Image (tube, rainbow, N blue to C red; front, top):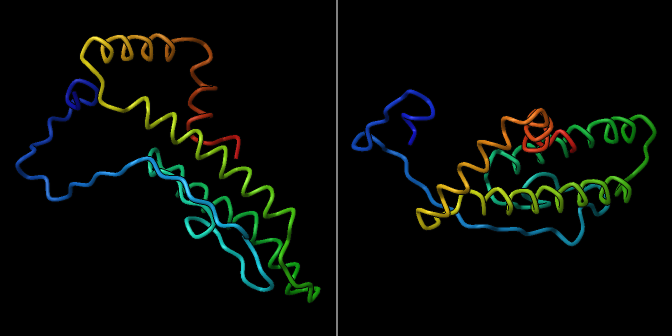
Length: 141
């Protein structure tokens, strides 16, 4: 399958890194308390498919950076409830997206897999395929 999609034929006998993961979603009850702010997996853990959890952490930090700079300049202490609401909302959406992506990659009977593959190939040839790619890449976050 890898060779068919990429042209590369990996040798399974030389594979030195194997891993498996399940659908997971955990969210901290509070993102910030006083001068402590959680970001990334510490604030919200989602299944590691498509790098969405990693991207979510980077986006948390990118949004938090200016808040911290302002806090240093003004002496304002956290937490920042609006920051927490926005980032937890993004985490919920990313969690739903990760679960959908995990479902699309789950092992299914051959007939279902063939149908799923055909449907995905068809959908990805539509003019909206760019929007689907941006959705998958979390351009909404």
